[in-house]
Amino acid sequence: MKKKIEDFHLVVMPAPLTPEEQKLISEYIRQDKEKRKKKHTRKAA
Image 1 (cartoon, rainbow, N blue to C red):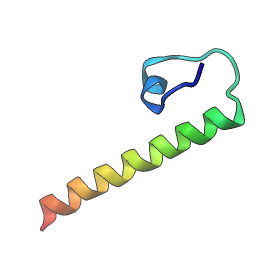
Image 2: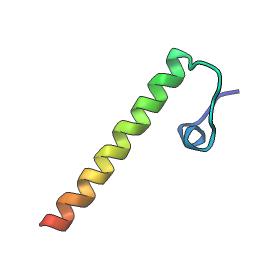
Image 3: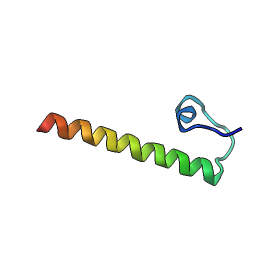
Image 4: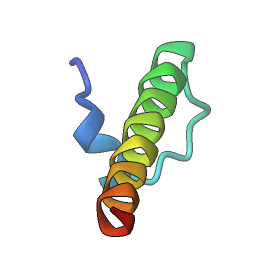
């Protein structure tokens, strides 16, 4: 079963992550940070 990025923040995973899962999570975190940055720049402008 393929996991979607959205699933990760709902689940606490006791098992060590596979490289693929780590990649998905870091990608999700990166996108999240960019979204927050955009919000802040909009407020400042």
